[in-house]
Image 1 (cartoon, rainbow over the protein chains, first blue to last red):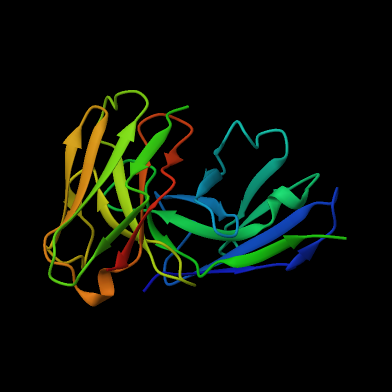
Image 2 (image 1 turned 90 degrees about the horizontal axis):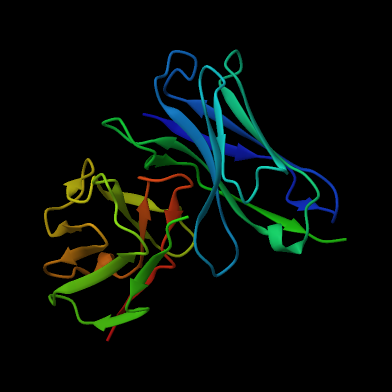
Amino acid sequence: QLHLQESGPGLVKPSETLSLTCTVSGASISSSVYHWAWIRQPPGKGLECLGGISSGGSTSYNPSFESRVTISVDTSKSQFSLKLSSVTAADTAVYYCVRQGEPLPGWYWGSWGQGTLVTVSS
Amino acid sequence: EIVLTQSPGTLSLSPGERAALSCRASQGLRRSYLAWYQQKPGQAPRLLIYGVSSRATGIPDRFSGSGSGTDFTLTITRLEPEDFAVYYCQQYDLSPQTFGQGTKVEFK
């Protein structure tokens, strides 16, 4: 059973970098043909995808975030990570790590972590 | 970027009734790359439908998706109490993928 778990600070100061990690269990991230991604949801609002990565490290970012976002993968730890720089209050959201659905292809999201709330505040 | 507009914003219905949720795209999808998700309070979204009309694993057959081009519909034939939630559509045909703003299905 695939399980994704987000971890990281729940509070980040404005202008700093938000860093989150997703730990994957129940499936091998290194041998995976799937893409993995980060999706966020501001309080009371809808969903937006920041970007994604393959197990081989190929990334694709939402142009709205491309100048601030970095997604990386560490297959040895079965983890992938998100860094979002120069955060403001508008980046306050629940952040979800997700895995591509099956069957392939297509970047739709079949497995979700429980989400972690990150608040940007001084 | 493709903008998805969902309507209505809120749907007030009773258990046993039929729900029809609309998702309209600002430009036509070339491929059948549209998904629907259900989200309950405090929970992560759950995939219901992918590829416009294919049900994800474990999704009851009272949920169905249809449509093409710019107009798509999620239909719930007979609402069960556990179906009252927020529903989002997502297009993954054109990058960046985008989501609609959601339709809330609430108890009447």
